[in-house]
Image 1 (cartoon, helix red, strand yellow):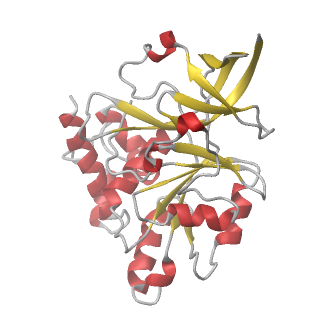
Image 2: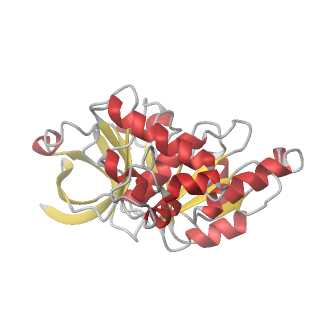
Length: 308
């Protein structure tokens, strides 16, 4: 019997593909039953990017242990409030792909992902896709969006697959790292990944095994190696993104611009909702803190009540 350690590069329900990175030689594995039963509040006990131990013989490989995660991105589905889903694990950087239009960006959705990245210490970059469609039509809206998020401390990268804008910059930034690409359906995430490496086809998937076929491709999480170096994890388009593992009193800490301001609040702790002498509320009134971000924060406080 062979034993070893590997990285999960594809998750298709109860079946997985593993690779002993950096060698890209894939082999299938299943999950040992007792591991599957451990986390009833998590829909997937193993995520793409997980480091695992396995045993293999002539009948195939079995995952025997999930090694401790350095970090992960997790969400709670709004219509499945008691369960959460791990999107990816052991990520070096998250790229949140949005489009101002076609489809229109939902700022509360974006802010929930950013809060989750802050919670688990994952650096995040916002990638504006399809800018060729609206750059000249909505320059003020584009500038306003950049001001909101660059003001909060996040890099914002404008890209266009059609024009080739930002692709080289994005490819270089991904080199040598494990990169998560996430966003809502239709934002152009798959097209961006294909532009980074034309040999890839995230919509169809180069990796194909008989026992993995017959699944909906949109439900698959998969890691791809980039020819330029590094790896990209492609996640299906996400509709709902509820927060997990964060208390109501802590949410403000994961808005970097609010965290800085909160040091000047009269009261500690401060919920930044009704207290007198609140530096966060004063900053909103004075135009120093984007009201869009503050409104997202208030929405998260309300959302927190729903899940209790």
